[in-house]
Length: 76
Image (tube, rainbow, N blue to C red; front, side, top):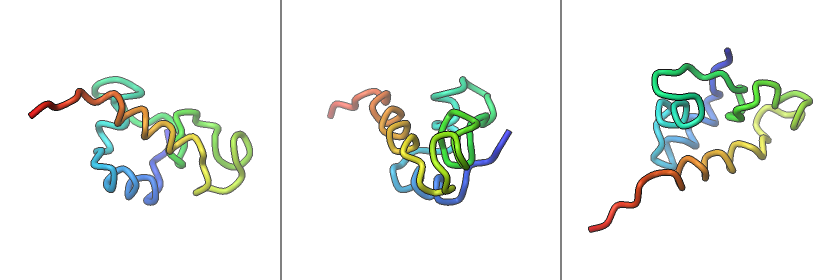
């Protein structure tokens, strides 16, 4: 299991998404993070599988959008 990089945690915070919300969206309630350090759910993503750098994951922005889109709409 890998931990999420600081840049990913900062992006989650900026989007108003908690680490717990992000992890549970993909891995279930009470789960631990089993994805890669770059925020991708594929634990092989960084360093050659999807990209070579650690902070240039193109998966993470799409996954973050998925989490945000899955939130229930709040009506005033």
